Image 1 (spheres, rainbow, N blue to C red):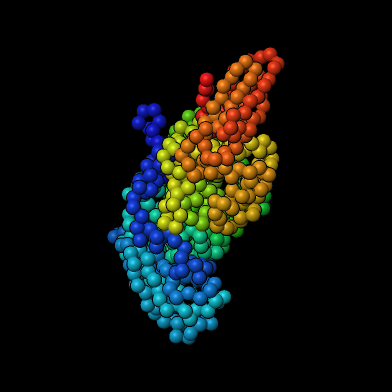
Image 2: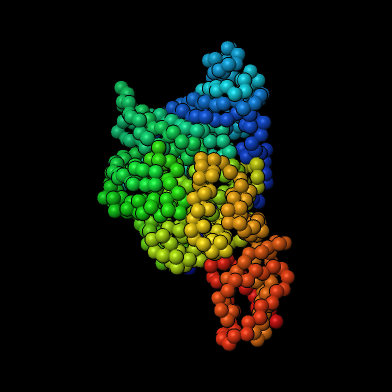
Length: 559
């Protein structure tokens, strides 16, 4: 869950404006060599595929330092000479041990040489790693990682205390990157197929992680090692520990793929509140399995974990910090009233399990694939439980968060996302596409088909766009261009002369062709272009003209 806080009427912030400001300032900042190293999937990354991260990390609560190693399994796809590992300053990479299966025997257990370039480390002399072999690196590191200043928007390590003064520790690092706390291939295009975390903390605390709990080992020094494992592919920024005075409750959900474990981990002081508020979790699951298809990670289960920040879509361990309130910290971001009927963080962050975690954009510039569909999941949740009109009102209400500052699609290959409009504007674009398809069952099958076709995959915007156009048999390419790649709101110019209606599009990309449902005498569809068209209707009746409000466009009456 990312950058969002916007003015309501009297000094209230929602999250769209804050995200937009950050995105705009990020866009204006000069691109650097470090941006290229972080964002490009180049010759030090493209020849090898991460298979597994096996993290062994000790959290030293007293001085906010961590230390440990990542035992990384990878497959060689083709010959390569250098291998890039990312670890952000002030963290320090100590050493790298290589194990080459089918390569030179001297690599088995030998220290490898590397050079540092900012937050990137380049391991040299990798030519002996043979294509199609599976190999290992053990990367040792330590340091005092960046502290999050305003998580989850300005991320890093979160070191807090609960209300009883017990340590409460976690991490939020989307955008910033997982390399803020462990060495990895920090690019969304390549996810490990599985992962393990072995987290050492004081034995008076408990550690919750992604996937399944595999046990705890007590140590004589008053620490304990908590083991968690994920058997599905996972984004590197989603691999997160939660450390605190946690207690557990849970339930079994009868879902589309069978029995799904739904587990809830909260601070011991919040147990009773959570038991009531987390009733929205199975309601979310029912609605989203209907619209999107089966929950993508049955093998790892679903968890909702109380976090020392607002929330984040950490796969199979969704971070929750909404204060056990409906809405967004008790407010309705849509202003429609429907947003107070459910817990925003439970719904939004869990929606990311399908869009962000199951289907992941290869480049952060295409983050609308995560945020646009997940923003629209809020509308679909409302629709499922309260009816289509309620969903429509919620979606239309979110438009107040659209700023049209910069394009939604960011800059490729430099780890730069686009506008915060990727939330409400993308959601309203999808809402318009749904109206044009004009068949909710067909639209539902497209959403389910996306999650099936791109199951556990990384994708580009073009793949998503092409899939929707192909399955709907409607060319939406210019609609995507308009809303994702420009800041212009399409304007429908019109004039009424008796029984004659004339209309055309303005402020749009060449070829923009979004059909519209209108009311002029009767409710009907028109297909505007940038050329004037005329509609003649002679039956008596009201000559007033209006466009269905479910379309995010402007109208302008001209003489």
